[in-house]
Image (cartoon, one colour):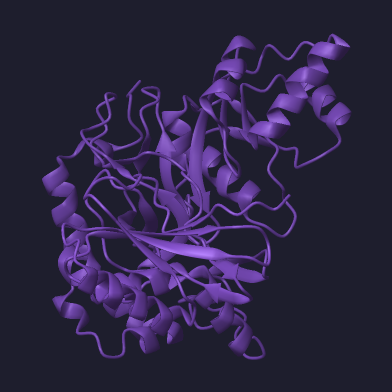
Length: 415
């Protein structure tokens, strides 16, 4: 029995990077030719020249809010807003709806969402039964994991959500080896089973997602006899990253190119710094290019101890959209980025909002070695110009701001 889903997981980092960058121009050309949205977004881009990460940054980030806006604008004629390269018919097996609503297509290729890799890393094997408690209603979560289980060679019981007693009864009768679903529902099942004296010790492993699963909860599951691993997938992109038995971050999937950018911008940050996760999908059916997930994470150094050589991310670290309202005005991370972009001597900035409600005060903390009054005055003017609000400036030493991805910190008292 191999320890890896396929040979792609153990190729050298240089080989992987070369293969992905070689595939990138073709994927961009395909998106430009077959997706009306990307025909517009890439209109002035020479896609043949986008064959490295530096060149990739010339393409603007498309965030989920923009995808929703395009879908709403085109809804009468195209529910996907021009992003899908598929059309209804034999090549499109299903259409899903996520909150918004945002509509996503499903293609017909085997393991379309690429979740098999994550389940294999979690210990799922051919011939096992998977109890799938993700929702089968409108959203693709259940289908993402079901298709991955089938790719591994598992049989699936489509449990869906709710009806705890009936689910436990099915577990007793069918004796599943593994669980897929949210960690919170798995905890409910285990607690209800314990309370009722129901034996579901058949369950030994799980792939969870959809919400945070902190180490303390993972440890609790282990005490109950279930090894739980996190899967990071989205309705738009499919699998992005997955946890392994090493439990040292999440390994990136082979079918995506991931960047970590400063929130509110498309500018990549150094490895190790927290920023927004931006993903370019190599899926020809739904070719999302530089798609801003809105999630914060950071690249970890080194390779996974399991032998998988793809880069790793730290995991979900919060949301990048830190938009807040100050004195009745919305202030966005992109505005903070615009202010700092005007001053090359500023290395990093963080806008902190303090005060009681209706008495807001904001202070822009900037990392720089320039402590002159002239820079402070220019920064104050830039804050007024960009946000239409007055703010104080506080100069701090380089490297002193927290590495947590926050561009706007709301420290107001709401009591």
